[in-house]
Image (tube, rainbow, N blue to C red; front, side, top):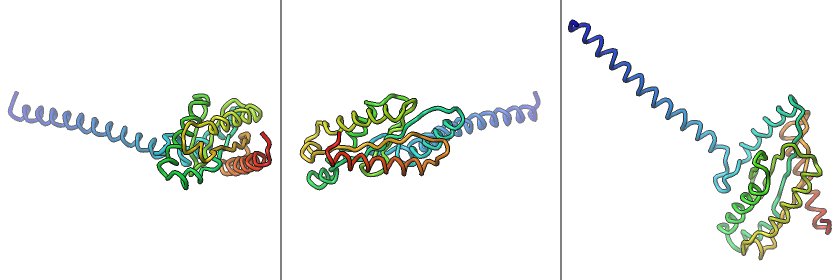
Length: 197
């Protein structure tokens, strides 16, 4: 081999090594970006989806329902007397209650269902292959489980929850469904105050 051929071979080897290094760095960066995108949709306190992540999942679900005529129901929960937890026991106790509620919801729904903390003390569960009656029964079960949380701050405040239910319909937007679920939750809250179970 001549000196010129040796130089070309060395240059090619150097380029291949640099190409391999850049490919590895690009793969690491792509994985990091994917992780950051995922984390951007997770509520840091409760480790369930946040509103942004839930709305994206809800839009995807509506498209799926429109295409495949599947069934799903949105369960919208609001904590009752949560302000009394924060006011009487401090925000650290309130944070513990929110984490416990998210864990309770996650533990007591199916793995295919989607749990989210939408804001403050509002949570949602997207339930697949369920009708309104099944979702209402699950909502009542979750209300009971939240009322029975074994946390001193929750017990002393009389923490509870109210769950509203609406079916997902392909001809509605995610915002319309969330609005309907919010109204259903407030109707449930009023009914519970009036003594209905």
